[in-house]
Length: 270
Ligand SMILES: C[S@@+](CC[C@H](N)C(=O)[O-])C[C@H]1O[C@@H](n2cnc3c(N)ncnc32)[C@H](O)[C@@H]1O
Ligand SMILES: [Zn+2]
Picture 1 (tube, rainbow, N blue to C red):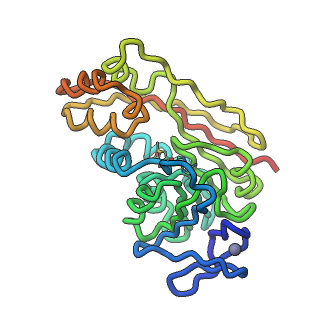
Picture 2: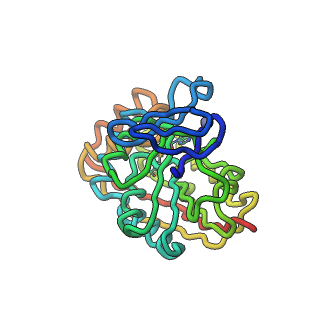
């Protein structure tokens, strides 16, 4: 039986050849790369679905250059510390799988690691790692059975406490990471006349108990224009900045900024 469930009738899928088919004969073909698109047309009224090619490409280049390796190590360590034997892990909003792949490698063959993202471009990129099981789907309508997940990851992506609580097993672990108030502050100062601090997501989540909170801060030495450009393009600021602000940034050869994140670990209440 497949991990993913039918988005229409919520029944489990069976794999038949290159398709996932539910008992009600709803059929979803696997792509050449092996992922499945479970996004329902009725839910796809919006113009953009998650991150586009430009953002995905920029993030792949920036993360690939190693700038967030310290964060990836911290997240992986946290996952491994909470993993029981043969864990089922779901990365909700996995992007191009930078953390997902690394975590799968660290957990080894016994682990089943799944990723879901609403962006087809992101899932297409994540599918380079053939060991990940991937679906294009929304965090707000996860294609997973009730109480089927041991560890749920939610890194820099929207969250839905009710959905997370539904798919996690009792006592399962939720790991969230999000930027803190002054994440990339110097980059913002270079672009905006009056930069604003980030508003921080609430730490309280219905149905969960917060068990660990860790601040992770490190410098980012962007010593090439190319790094400044890719970092900027992977942030939401890119689409919100005037041409003047963008030109200011393009004029810089280097920029010293810093990353500041909060890593929060929760247990799903029984
Ligand atoms: C900032 S990126 C983070 C990606 C990845 N977790 C990482 O840290 O590299 C946010 C991701 O959330 C995805 N996303 C946004 N809304 C979503 C939704 N409703 N359901 C699933 N994914 C969503 C975007 O497409 C994007 O890939
Ligand atoms: Zn169905």
